[in-house]
Length: 110
Length: 106
View 1: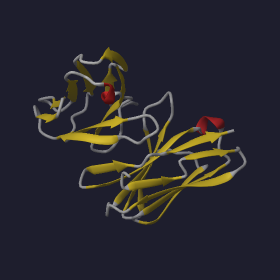
View 2 (view 1 turned 135 degrees about the horizontal axis):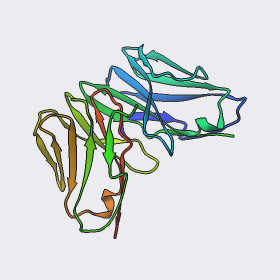
View 3 (view 1 turned 180 degrees about the vertical axis):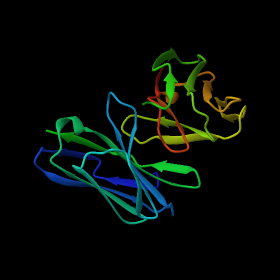
View 4 (view 1 turned 90 degrees about the horizontal axis):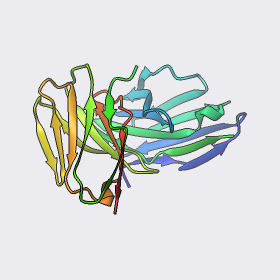
């Protein structure tokens, strides 16, 4: 248990499906992040939220839609994805320079 | 544009050997963090270095921040199979290097 919980751990979806990834932290952190990790690229920062407000969108395609209803929960809504979107999606939270990652959701788009 | 360069990209050694991996940049950082990631898991923070020239030790792991705060190294003494993983460095704003994938064979 890392303090940051991601569900589901594994997800297989078709290109026409709509699904959501969930991230939850009860560490009292005020910042949350989505990262994408694929086999051939470094860990890529996707979105940053501070106190529920999106402070960074790293040129992510609109088929990825984040939502942060409160400082403990972060979602990533997925629709009409492409096979190249298959990757490990990691959530992290931080406060005062201390970062904690979840175990990730392994997404496969078929 | 990749902010950080990590080397080597892959490293495979025998148990008991020593090794050093590097994290380099042309930018100056206020701080740098090292993480280890095991297969199927998220990265776990190992250490944060803040001061130029700083050395921090975590059991058999020694981390050094360059005097100019543009580079850092991680030295592992007497590596063990449990050290196997992807070692990542990242500056304060969480843009990671590609990592060094370390395999320690028993």
